[in-house]
Length: 389
Image (cartoon, rainbow, N blue to C red; front, side):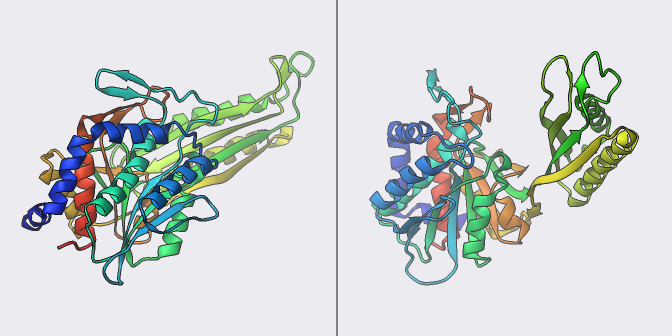
């Protein structure tokens, strides 16, 4: 902790930390600017353009977008060597037509995507601004990256491209808008599947007795729901969507579901996947003679990984939180952009900037009271990771 206090006592650092507490209204205005730009997964272009313009206005170097609309900006270091990547995902779970109106209720701000991840994206811009305005030159390059495709079936495509670009000799700090007080250095494994049923269908009266694709699919859902999964390591399953059928009086010819399977342990996740495959195979065999076909296709995968709690970057994250007065630190095991570097053995943590709730709901909200401390801990973590003296 002595080193952290030494860093924080630098007059330029102190000036930056004071600014975070004095300019909260400007911070919220920037968060709202980001939040008001629709950015559903696979359609983040408009928000990417906004961030690119902000990076350019701040005088970052090598500001550009790649083919996926990941946005990059570099704060040059004093010498060549390992870089620090500070990233936040651009995308939200909400369709482009979603009403993005924001409502204030007391100190809380409500609006779709306001925490996840408009606050995180704004945090990138505010960090670059703080480092530039306070002339905090660092030993190594710091890259600010706003990446795409973190949510849903984006399958971490954006951060995968980032990690492919920079390789293993870098350090990753992943920023989420919520999750203040949490440090994530362990990544949950996730496997996602689409299970599809196809039969002959027919009229609900005239063809009664013909297998109904929705009924067959329901047997699979019920069998999955009867599975027993361990509490430790935590393991979950979820049927998130079901589609199919033509009309109320038609025996459904086709139906499909999308299934999310997760575990803290790779071997337990593999067993769960095999259990589901067994269920699908048993139901398929039962109805094969009736011409029913069932398929199970992988549509998404998030790799698991971890670094030890003793890792220097994890300790820096802890020290940064303790410096701003937060002691009740939660070591979260999560599914974030940090999954990709962690799965490759690359040093990475994910942290949050303030408290939020109701993520992925239209009544999502943030509590801005922690935002100055969240920004302060992020700045201190960047400085420590970059070797600031």
